[in-house]
Length: 249
Picture 1: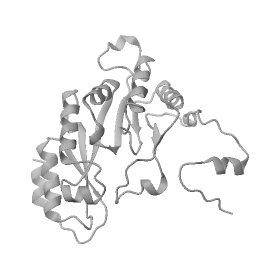
Picture 2: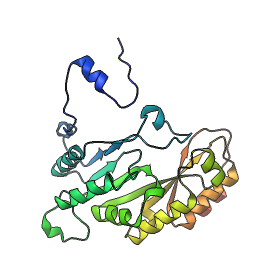
Picture 3: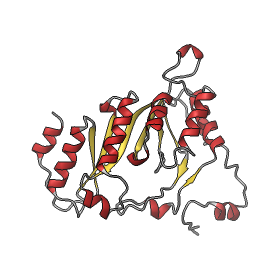
Picture 4: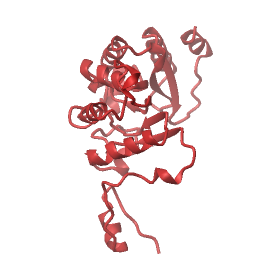
């Protein structure tokens, strides 16, 4: 028989199985042999309700994981020689002052991560951090950008989706073009190469036309950052090859 659950509360499953798992115990990374790349999450869920996103259907609310567990898992990964760690939180920079920033500050304090501003002779291992899951540019402040770069973040993926303000409002008002441009400014000022910043864009959405797609591509190009297109719903949308070419020249 199947056991059906909804949301992120696993207590019904633990009760059914009659077990009491230690939620502070890191994932079983020891089961892997040579491990160069790994993933980590500090939180679950997202406070936004974007019309094109499935996360609200799975996670009903945003919630941080136990910080001691996240730090222990990071330390385990570093000890195992992992060189690249991708954070797969759906809202990594939401309430950063309560979740991400204390985590990074403690990881630097404990020498789990090597600060890029410190001499490598301190003995900390060099680890590259990545954020492939689409950061909300609205919450990237000057202090947060500097801390993320200091802690070793090498790539930043920002959720733009569309440069159209009307489309942004219709789908949830998650972020504006001005907020994304401001985030890029903070990240580059902190030392990030523009080519290490990517703006996600949605192609084929039923409420998007070719002109908006081209405008989004040109907007990313105007900031000297990369643009990455993801397919939402394809409805005979023809993208101008000339526009794509101009954004890469």
